[in-house]
Length: 222
Image 1 (cartoon, rainbow, N blue to C red):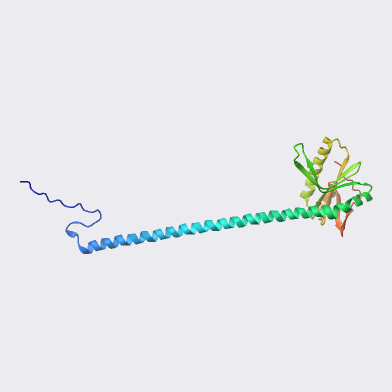
Image 2: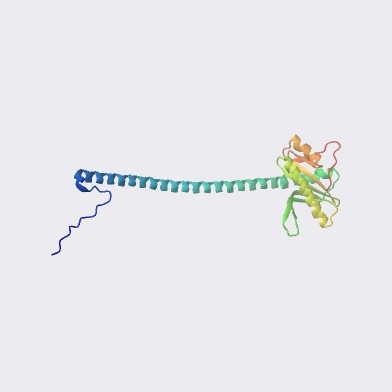
């Protein structure tokens, strides 16, 4: 006759076993388990809040980026309008009367290109632009117009005239090229720099312009 073997249940990990197992111990174990579950739930809430806050920050950053883009577009539009205002100044204030001022000096210009004269290369790409260009059979006068000329404007105009000279040479145009700087407001330093560069200085005077020619001034030729 086979002897019956008493099968004992495997102890559960973490659960009190043996003679020391009491109701109080089991209850304490369940309480500890419940506490850890609550801690995990609180931790999950924190993670959820962080996710929500991150999403909100991303949304705010996206809105801020859109605002920044709008500001950049608005600034570009305003700068474009400012550039246009300079063009209008050249076309409506400087150009109509400037040839008269130079004619009084004996130039007798009979052609006026205003609103921007473009210099293009062989690939038909604009490499330079002159605000006002005056011409006669012997001379070309390139005028740069700025509301308030700076030293860098004078330096750029020198480079512009060199480009114009090279361009006309390619077309076998041997006329002499002079330069002028026109402005509504001239600083003394900028005015002297323009004169030293050999540029005529044209300043706003009421509704027209006047040419300030100091004693001994020799206009530069390109």
